[in-house]
Length: 102
Image (cartoon, rainbow, N blue to C red):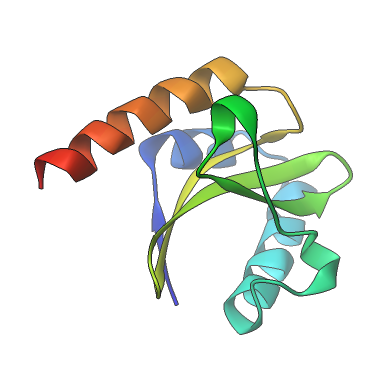
């Protein structure tokens, strides 16, 4: 599996505490082995976030991602559950435009 990182993800990741980064790396490694491991609580998002998925990192910290191909995903954001709806919506709109123009 290949994981691409959106610039928004990179920016938000840089603001995480060291403990949150460690937890992220643990969950990322699990995601590589089995994206649907129950500990990740991997689930599709609905409504305005239709087409994206979420995995739990720790507490209410989660990663929002989009499946690009069978073996490639794009990590869009790392955030507190429900914390960046407007940003995610904007990024999804831009992502759809980029995919359509390819």
